[in-house]
Length: 370
Image 1 (cartoon, rainbow, N blue to C red):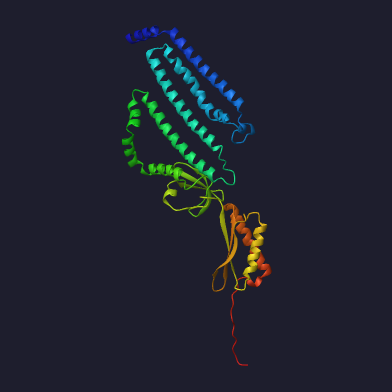
Image 2 (cartoon, helix red, strand yellow):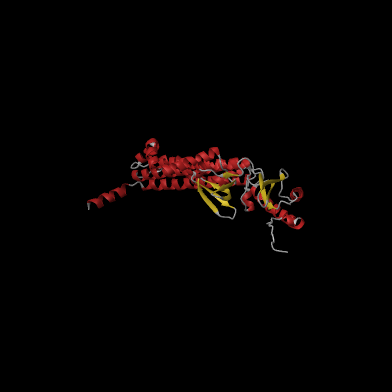
């Protein structure tokens, strides 16, 4: 009975007029924040329309201003009302416990909105820089370098922002404040403990940072890994995705590229030399085959005109080894050119010099009386 009496007294002591006014202020603040957001981003979209949205295709906007609505519209929709609430929060009249809970909620939501905005801002900066470096052009070495470096550095920033945001949110709660403080202030001790518990994970993280700085691989590089030919499709802080020539995907830990040898065919440039080996009889007219090779290359659009040559690189018991050397603008074109040259040279020898194909010679002696 006593508890019920105290509950009724607490209920009657509530300033309902002040509470209703405070709730109205909160609703008006949220509405004003959403309206301000809608007006501001409507003006930005009108001032700089996003061409990629109009065409339905992903692409670079014509103006820098178009990047702001694309990346910042969503987090700002949460941030603007929270900013207005933060301004009007001191004027709210509520019961002490309810007001304390509201302030905790407002602080945590504001930290989350700021962290979200910073993460999206990193994406805006990345697009702002990379819009000058198109990767879908022939000479894209510098562009691939920038795409790789900024992509990994942005992931590192997202990780750092997330850790700071979670720590700050924990510090707003009295019961778990020490956890948030420890997460930031005791980074050295935590780092030592985590280092023993997750050595490989930390090694992988540092390998990702090292790849971003030294860049032994870049996006769209042609590599040979584990005997597979493919292109670098994605680079993260922990693994690399390689698109194999037959559309398979090879997932490799990023530490692989810091610890083991691999081939990178586009480390400096995409130009590459291709070879074709033929094994023919000793009677082959090498000069005629050389002339035919030059004719085949001149007629082929895959040849870039830099290197062409035919040499006798070995002489074995029954055959002579001919090596045809040619150049192309990239690895894929070089493969097609090699197959084309191999086919045409074989056809030429079969048609013009069939006796120059590999043969087995034998002498047969017949004995007997005449």
